[in-house]
Length: 195
Image (cartoon, rainbow, N blue to C red; front, side, top):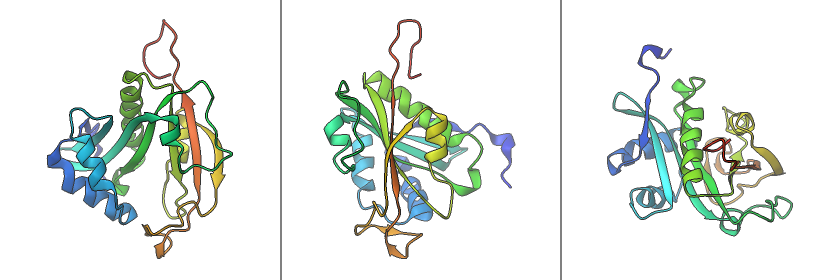
């Protein structure tokens, strides 16, 4: 059991010093992710439209989340045709990768990382936020967290990840399903931030 007297952990922006612990956490939980180094390099660039937040308990990385500010077309390139976003949307905050160390789940860390990424997307004036939620049959996945934050499921695809990515569930080539979700940012004058 985790000593929760050290909670809440610090959630801060990623720096290059976090690279190895972030990569190790992802691989430990989910296997190889061929593009993570590119995403982390982008997140360290001050002129970027990519961000990574890390959750730290003392100096240990216990979670992270990556988001990017992109066009609707870019965010939905790999989505099935029946997962369409509102026609009025131009840009979104795409929640790209996120993970919390298994020993630290159910302590609100995923929620805090999600809130920071949503606030970041709000700052870029995105119309909404999107995510592709992996259906992990062996551990917690993001569907419950996203639903609690007001995301709506637009579509689900069986064997969405059937490509060359390694999967800790499927013994190498992934055959897991995914849900495609979104939520709109509210922009009324009385309330700041993503509602």
